[in-house]
Length: 323
Image 1: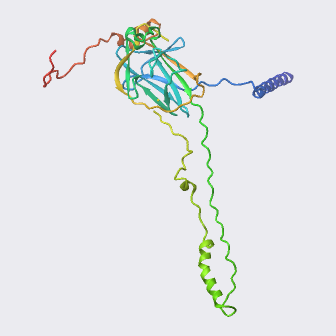
Image 2 (image 1 turned 90 degrees about the horizontal axis):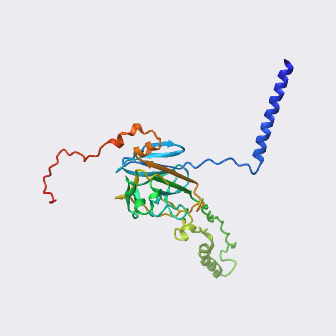
């Protein structure tokens, strides 16, 4: 019995030492690299009140439930400590330029560190957008622009910013106090040892010596001498704020809304290779059900009829234009 226990203990000890040696060998191997974790960027779809629309995971993809006429916005999040550019497409069309999605040549929205950007529509100019609204595939913006095959998908490509070089360190000279040189020794002369004119000359020259060398001089501050340009080398500031189904839903080029943006400089770390590309497919209740997705809890969306909103006081006190 004792031999058996010793034998098992020896086997366990050898196995443990073997695993430790293998682990250390991998750590020393210069070619050994653990798989990097994907960046934590994300995006979601919200309604006008900021509520997230329901999504479902099915066969490795994420599907969004929409309904005709509903306006939606795209919120893109950046939980990292550096700026990131997000190139966004809806139905295969870039939301900034309206051209076909091309994250290499198109530019997107710049998201500040630990921030988010709400994209409210296809950009018309720096001040306005055309709202995102679910509609029929044939009435979608993409179909009207000649790409109906891409209707039903939303995508985002993320580009981190190239690290900025650190601001140069400006070393300013430090003022150094220097003790004044002592005045030359002058023997005391009461006028008895020589002509009286010698004492008079010494008395006249003394104030001049005090002016020229007696008081220490303090140099001007370098930034004052340059006209206050101490911040010339400070770091630049930035502002934060910038293919799917053709079954039942697309995205309309909707009505105009106010949404202001501005241009900022941004240099991608890798100009042609995004660090992460995410996509989301969408459809209505019938379209998702046809794919085998259980949307029974949202069945009312398909069956609810659309009627005009009732008015408590339909009559107006002012004259209405003729029909």
